[in-house]
Amino acid sequence: MSTIRAQQREETRRALLDHSRRLFATKGYGAVGLSEIVTATGVTKGALYHNFASKAELFRAVLEEVQQEVGERVSAAAETVTDPWGQLVIGCEAFLTTCTDPEIQRIMLIDGPAVLGWHEWRAGDEATSARHLGEALQLLVDEGVLPRQPIEPLTHLLSGAMNEAALWLATTDEPHALADTTASLRRLLESMRAAD
Image (cartoon, rainbow, N blue to C red; front, side, top):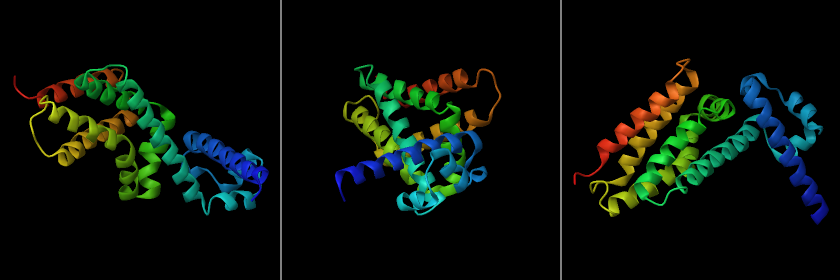
């Protein structure tokens, strides 16, 4: 494949992802048809199928980008402080705050598990946000900030709690929901610390 054709294919793929993401975020996966995607993108169905075998595969690629973006936002927020404990707290708070973005809520929290199924959705979460969380927890155990314990179950428990909180934030109308959830998260994290 020539360099120009490869570049054109990548541009088409990028356009499909960008337009699909916007449509999935505003309308939801079930309400978006392939014809709407190709019209919005300005390509043929053949071009879509050349890049993605199905609407579900296209959604999967959009979801992977969203999950990666959430992981990057969490990491960037955590890196604003140098203290490992502060990094955990700031990173967890950044996850919850990021998940209040309506686009992320719709794609990652509402449609993601429904379209791909819980196991596939969870695998994507583990590869991004949960992986960073596990690394942060391991460092805190190694430094004695957290009591020595198996990291994998702790990561799943904390990740599950934050995912559940993010799902609740996506559906509640409570005016102080994020502030209340963040305060509860801080209390939960503080209770995990090793006694001095």
